[in-house]
Length: 290
Image 1 (cartoon, rainbow, N blue to C red):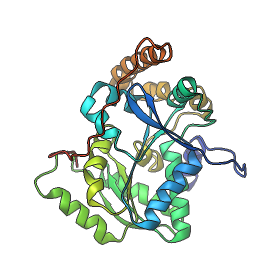
Image 2: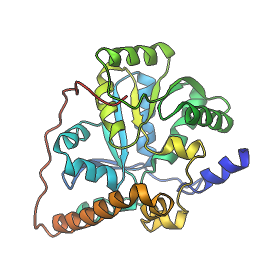
Image 3: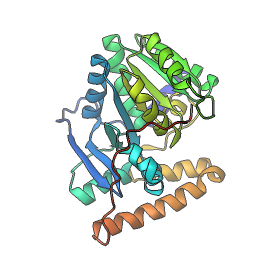
Image 4: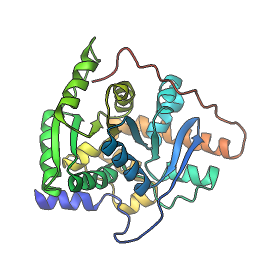
């Protein structure tokens, strides 16, 4: 099992070790109406760790094409996304958009699964604890075992599976109480898009710590999903790899979203249209997925 996890981790896009580069955090840019940050691994890692050390609210999401297009198609959700402290470009197509539209000169994208490893390594070194929220009890057990094998000093303060339903009255306060009472300094949220963004938006005002919505990172690091080969990630084809693995579930999502994303991106670049950016919506949803 240890070897399997090592091989899986090796297939997640990781920048070369030992290469010293200046961190990049140049603020938000309009990508199809969604505000995406020109940010790299180093800056994202430090922002999350600073919030964890200082015990302050911070909402983070790494968005691939599916996440961006979910915001484009749902203006209310878009307004939620525009409240996040950092919306990182996850995958080549979103990085390309920032470089094409704004000459951002980003040399890499910010993979949610890999960023999790970078952040947790630092947290283990500093004795900071993490809370795992989402997925199923089986995946959480496999995930926590995998993470503690990788980082022997990592403190997992608690883990709570998704209930796969909407929140009931008062449940948000109960969840916040359990997280705060655990002594955690960071919450990893693995509910899938767009449930995890809605959960993070609703819960962030109740917690004095950062929430990091991490998409498929739970499944990757638990060994349930295999990341795309690095060459496919570099070519912007990670979506195709997922489509090959799960064609029945994902074909509509990827074919429709990817085509629309490309058409809209060309239109924005050509200035045929300028996508409107919804004002950030800070009001919490009365019901949200838990």
